[in-house]
Length: 403
Image (cartoon, rainbow, N blue to C red):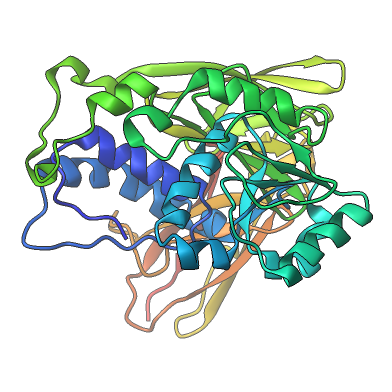
């Protein structure tokens, strides 16, 4: 749960995108004595973005991760800070574009089949039962890699000649040489679905309705992160840095390579179609986003080129009017899930927030009912459906007669 007292707008924005890319189902902010103007400005920017797309964001499911970072409980029993230390290894693996997630040894019986590799970072204690689980995983064809800080002996494991991370913020984050070594070591064992030559791109794959989505978030460099580290005890007083004024309003571009067939790619957050090129079995996407922010890429089988709204011409007071929205490619419904925004405007021109809503068009279709009340205004009501990943929209009118 983040807080709203920090005085740096860019940090609030950066953290909000990282939270979304982590796959959270909800995000609650701690509001203590006060909220800084910087926090309120950032929330004003990301709040509507999340709210309008909340049905899609809540429906996204993480694609099965192919790399497991082992986090044994027994290691934390002897080193209480081990989970925090292991976070640096997770960050380096993510910046090497490994499809990584932390995993307890006790979870391996249910999840080991999805992993192409399991990594041990600085593991000094492992119970016999957990070692047995690793042996079984390797016997089934899995690969275990131990870094140079791991002292526990795992027979049959591949020993890396370097550490996955250094648990020191000033030196352990964003070490490009170390990240490159990790990426090279994993190439033979676990090829990621999405990658980039830019290690400052966080790439996290999700699915919804059988379609792929990719969160791409621009990360701070080692120097940028170091510059933003506040002095100990001065965290609440850390203000904006003049050298980074309006950095969050600049654009960052990166080429992302995705191992998928030909797809039409949109940024769900901006409603823009991405420039893509097919090269062999990869799709090369030219992604653009604000500095230290991100984009959510949707991989559609075809371009959604129209929205169709079906509604009755007249409605009856006290009864529901059935409405359907269809997302089309040509004259056919495009069978994918789309974020939809429904706006309902009363005859007098005011938007009715009770009848309007955010939605997810499952399989390209969203059906809903408008429960017209007996005291609703007479005249023409306008229903508009906007497909948010393209911005395409269509309206229909419903006549509500006099009493």
